[in-house]
Structure formats: structure tokens, C-alpha cells
Length: 135
Image (cartoon, rainbow, N blue to C red; front, side, top):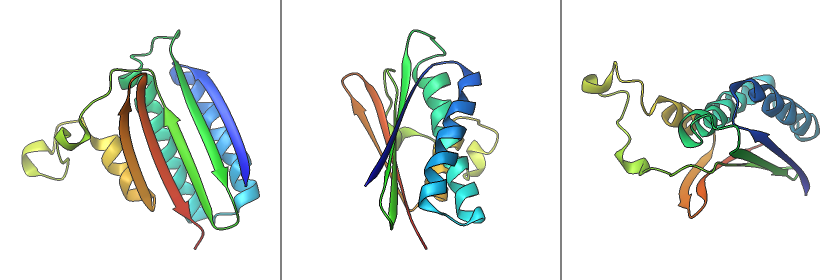
């Protein structure tokens, strides 16, 4: 099992560090270009949500990213220090009444891009887990 870890302050510009981490992890893991692009959309959406919505861009709060993989599966965990939310109450952005609402799109998109997606609110923030399987 190979593991990578990154901790960033909650600034939008730090998303580049997340992208670099995923590039390194995928060089070892070997997703196809299409699968890697989908994963990058999911990871950057959730990392940006952690920075902007979770930590409210408070540079004193951290976003932590853990990546681990073997030959068949990659697991990405993104944690923030925010107040959390009820994921079940996010509006479905595909419903006509929500079509212009910008809330919930990042989570909706990320869920669609990975094989498994989990969220839980922890005492110290939120945790998102995304899993991709090598095809």
C-alpha cells in the first residue's frame, strides 16, 4: 500500500498543491487519462469546497488530503475543520427548481466521477472519502 499526505492552509491558490499530489499518486497508480481526469474533477471540487465552504477560507484552518492505493484501488480522504452539513439536505441540482442554484453542485459532480463516495461530519470538521477502482 502506497500512501501520500498533504496539509494546506485554506487558500484557493493551494489547489495547485492538491493537483500535484494527485499527479504523483496517479503516476504510481496508473489510471487512464479519462479516468484520471474524472478523478481530478472530483478531488478538486471537494478540496475547493473544503477550503471555501468548510473552512470559510480561514487561512488558520487546514485541509488535509490522504491518498492511499494498491494495484487495484485508490482511496482519497479530504478533511476540513468546518462546521459540517447534512449531505442529505443538499438540493439536487438536476431538479428544475434548483437548476439555477449553485449549492450542492460540487458534491453532486464529485459523486458522479468516482466509484464510491462517502461523507461524514466529525467533531473537528468534515471528512469526504472517494474511491476509484482501476478498470
